[in-house]
Length: 197
Image (tube, rainbow, N blue to C red; front, side, top):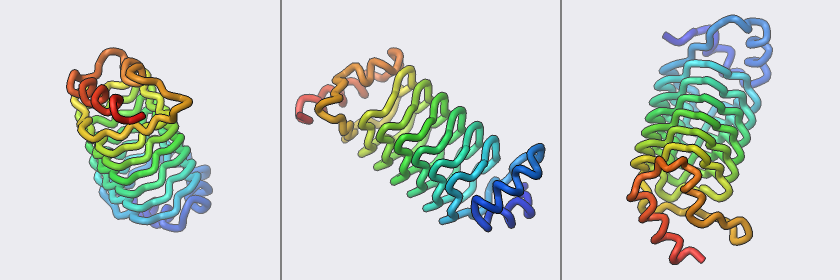
């Protein structure tokens, strides 16, 4: 059950929240199942927090510390997570449609079953991330690091890998998934590569 005190503080924004967090460093963050839609939490320290089933649509989490946090099954449509620290975050089955994760550090993130349709992942570090069963239709993966990522059973049809001409990685962009990529994903990539340039 979400903490009423924490909910009250977080709605004041990142500055108030970070002050409270510094003073209450040993308290577990529990903001699961609450409405945080549209909040400006740029640079907030939300490390290891519970946001399961919460609504953060349109929230601004740019540069926030989200390491180890649980956002599974959360509504994150249009959220701004640009340059956020997201190592070991759980985004399992979360809705990240239209989300901005550009240049985010999401190494070893659990993103299985995510809706990443039309999301911006440009320059994000997804090393070792679990993207199994995710929807990446229309996602921007330009310069995204997918080394050792699990891309099994991702929805690749119409996948727009907007790879810059000078940084083209050709099929080894997907080879870096450690061989875990599904045959369907490879076939879709090959079809895209034939017409992309």
